[in-house]
Image (cartoon, rainbow, N blue to C red; front, side, top):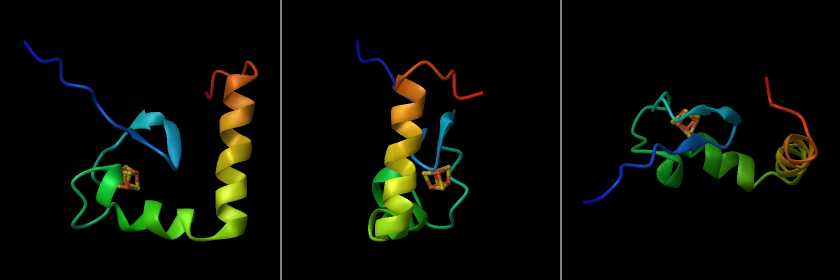
Length: 60
Ligand code: SF4
């Protein structure tokens, strides 16, 4: 039996991917995620947000 894992949105880690970006099947082919990961400043912001969440922030 396989368990379905809901992917999280890398832009809003507290939320599941809602397929908000047209044409995306999930974070793996989301154009917004692609853009973010190719922008140094946004990528750093994302990394900072993840660090913050790991260090005790609930993200909410
Ligand atoms: S489609 Fe992209 S931006 Fe929208 S929720 Fe999913 S991963 Fe996030």
